[in-house]
Structures are given as C-alpha cells and as structure tokens.
Image (tube, rainbow, N blue to C red; front, side, top):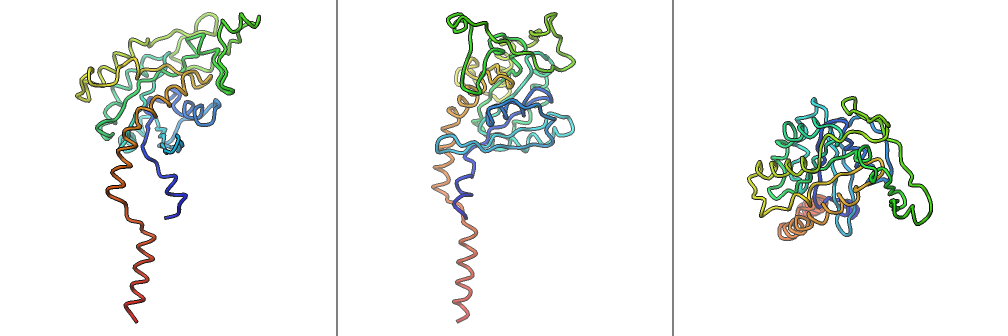
Length: 263
C-alpha cells in the first residue's frame, strides 16, 4: 500500500446530524476553510479529512432531508463523536434531533461522545455577531472602548421562514435556550442507558456556534478532538496488535511464489 494512503487513513470518525437548513455544511466549511459559504442542501453525505497533530479525523456532513434519512445510520457506524446540530431560532430543529436523528446513532461506537450544538448564534447574540475568526481576531466592547472605535455589528444572514425577526432586523428571537439544550443532552444520556454522573457534563458538551462569524466553531471541534483522543489511541493499539493485511504485498508475494514453484 502506498505510504500516502496510509497517512490519510482516518483514525476516528466525527459525524454531523441535524435537520436541513441548520447549517451543518456551513459549519464544516467555516472550520476547515476558515470562511463562510452559502451552500445548497447536502445530497447523501460528504466528508472532510482533518489532520489534528499526528492523527487524522474524518468529519462527515450528512443530509437533513427526509428522503436521505435512512443513510444517517450508515454514516454513524463506528463514529467516535456525533454533533447534533440545531438552529437556535427554530424550536422544531431541536425537536427533530430527538424525534428523527437520535436513533440513527445506534450504530455509533458504544463510547461515542455526543455534542448538542445550536448554530446561527449570530442571529440572536450580539457577541456572536461581532466575532471574527478569519484572522483569529475577536472584537468585544471593551476592546472597542479602549481603541475609541464603535463595535462592528454584522448584518444577520438569511433566516428560515419560521424564524421571527425582531423589529430592528438585526437580532432575532431565540427559540431554543441553553437550558433546552442541556435538557436534551440529559435525555440523550438516558436514551443511551448512561448515568449522568459517569458521563461528560452537559455544560461541557452543549455549545452555541455561528458558522457565519466563526463564533465557538474552533472551540467545538477542538474540544471534541481532545475528547476522542482515547478512542484514537485505543484503535491504534488494536491495529498494532492485529495488523491489517497489505494486499499489494500479498499479490506480489503470491506471484513470486507462483513463478518459483514452476521452476
């Protein structure tokens, strides 16, 4: 097997699940390409291979459309972490996680890590609106006051029809609170038959992000990568104890033995 293909073999899998229009593809683009993209609905699924230190992590983007729902369990098979994504301005998107998507994770690893993530925080949170990560710069009120400048407020990105806009057109009504996300995380643990006292705390595994401004995006992925490290090390140890067969070498070896046997 060529050396390059060995380098690119993923150590673990991270999967994004959620209804359509919650921003799964945009979130992945923001993390991997450091910019925001207006995207169309994902068909089936796609993945990006992220190198994290000496490890390779495949991040899977799945379709939220109903007609592709059955593919979700296939993409979740063997996942070390699952990101359950909702839209903070759309209550139904949170409900869909429990009603449609949670059962798809039955094929994930038994020790899979779950993160409940509310995207589009820039629509409801001024701090998320002011965040800029293209150059790793965060602009807050304190810094603006010291510089004598006005804080830059980004305009809100297009929103789903079900998301009511405020009169100002800049801040939208937040339909899903942080407490709602914490409660869902608790129900996920119960669904998995896990005890809260023996699991990762909800405050650690519930995030609010903005794919548009980059708010909390790096924090989300880097936290998950740190938490799946034990799975990576265990998998590598298992591979060392039970090495895979190199088919190219086997083909070469069998052909050589075949020629020598004819002599």
